Image (tube, rainbow, N blue to C red; front, side):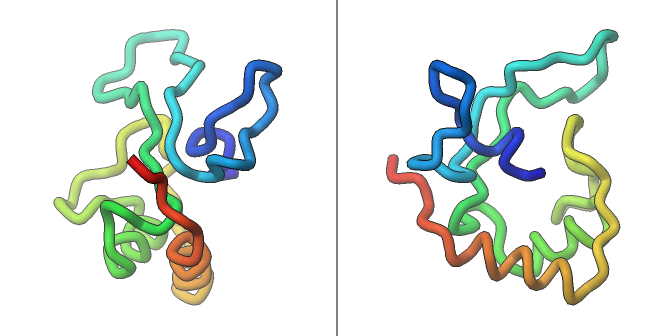
Length: 99
């Protein structure tokens, strides 16, 4: 479900496959104010900002490298280690956004 937030959409609302997991403005908001709500989902293709170990820790514990939980609406995942490693490997294999 990473693509729902981390992939931009076309004008028709379809996922833009030319920018797969390259970050996007979130087009939804919570019904009530939530502290620390993220308005953008960062690009995760190619793991441009977090290394393998940080992504694996995030997927296993729900915590960012600084020990804080990921900002909502990012779920607090609790992946098994092998699954977290597989996701990190997949993300690393994708081309990062060119800026």
